[in-house]
Image (cartoon, rainbow, N blue to C red):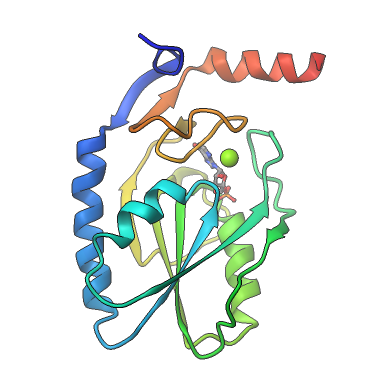
Amino acid sequence: MDRLDRDIVKVLFTQEVIKDRIAEMGKEISDAYADSVPLLVGVLKGCALFMSDLIQQISIPLEIDFMAVLSYEGRKQSNGTNRFLKDLDFVIEGRDVLLVEAIVDTGMTVGYIIRNLQARQPRSIRLCTLLDKPARRIIELPIDFRGFDIPDRFVVGYGLDFNQLYRNLPYIGILKDDVIGLNRQRKKKW
Ligand code: IMP
Ligand code: MG
């Protein structure tokens, strides 16, 4: 077992399962935007792998853009105070925007982004997330395209990190509790 795999207590979705589900999502999105050229807005950095695979499964013309917000800063839980690290390149007024997230947990990050983007008067904003952790939702959000529901556990891989690590795992797995604990102690000492 290599250095990343051994920190995973359980694989939730293999590379194959993720790929198949994204193919289905790509079809749904292609149908939903049949008469439009949507702008897919990825929320960095977690969306990187999902965005890349998703757009290759969408068969209609589209554009992509990215934004980054700081919501976690190494803590395990979001505190609702977000900060833009990177704004969009494009003006979205009158556009059909599809926000692409890797995971919606409390909903605070995406809720904040949607409020901000709505003020720019796009024609529509819809939300696409690969993972949905409904047990921890604080901000109610309509999720238009959803990959998988997951239990209330901390997951990593396929773009998702813990303290910036594990994004390069090709599958999604539950991180061992003692890894989360260990890293916290290390962080304190540093
Ligand atoms: P929210 O604001 O609570 O919905 O959190 C959204 C952000 O928290 C996501 O974009 C992720 O960066 C991070 N996050 C929430 N849950 C997890 C998880 O289980 N693994 C990795 N990152 C997570
Ligand atoms: Mg993170």
